[in-house]
Length: 193
Image 1 (cartoon, rainbow, N blue to C red):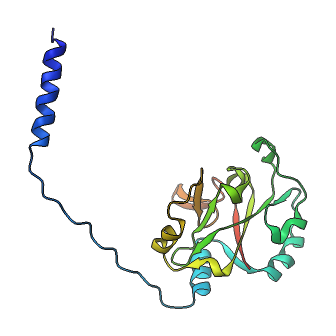
Image 2 (image 1 turned 30 degrees about the vertical axis):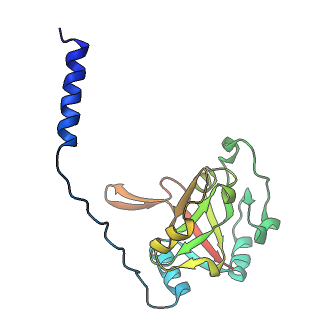
């Protein structure tokens, strides 16, 4: 049987051997300031459409909304509060038949169409995932070119939860066919204000 002293001495020998390995200090590489050429709104809209989403103006969204017949709509956006048919419940299980959630994004990234959202904009963390259709209202002045710039803006913000959303839910692992709405919202509409 191996004694505790032998184990500790083996551990100490291993740690001291590791500490004795010479290693030179290396400077971290500098990240270049990546830039995109073109109009930010057009680049963002192109990225969203590439992700199978749609970008609408406020007027276009106002025209589209009545054409759909959602039984349950929850809007946490000040721009579309009057379109809510239900209040946000405390229990996320009550969202199981939610037709449309209208939320506000904090920033959008033109290179890939990703939209940053935090707890303060979600109400319930399950909301963007459990709704059948998702609309995100985004201030056009909150668009950035790259994810690097997006992460710089997010910085060290203290949020319990945050995520980037870049389109409706989709997967292509089922018989190598693209399936939209497999794990979340079937559609994403971004309303640029």
